[in-house]
Image (cartoon, rainbow, N blue to C red; front, side):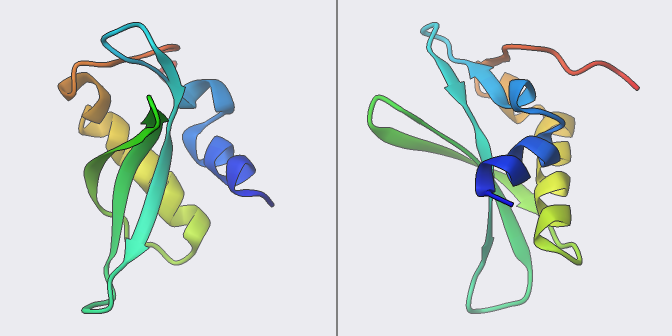
Length: 98
């Protein structure tokens, strides 16, 4: 499975990765999972590129059994912690409540 497919599945679909920036630019975001040499924790970051630069926001710990589960947890935290909204951006498509 490609990284794009893994991101799409973890986010709930490609359309749920789309973010509208304050200037009207539309971007497709992703969650990055990093493990630092000093420990075993996995740290999540919300990321996208715009204007040739990478924008990144810390999400929190995304410790899970598998990489796919860590991505899914990361996307869940992005929404629960309102990372997009707190940064002055908005979701292009709002996630429907289950």
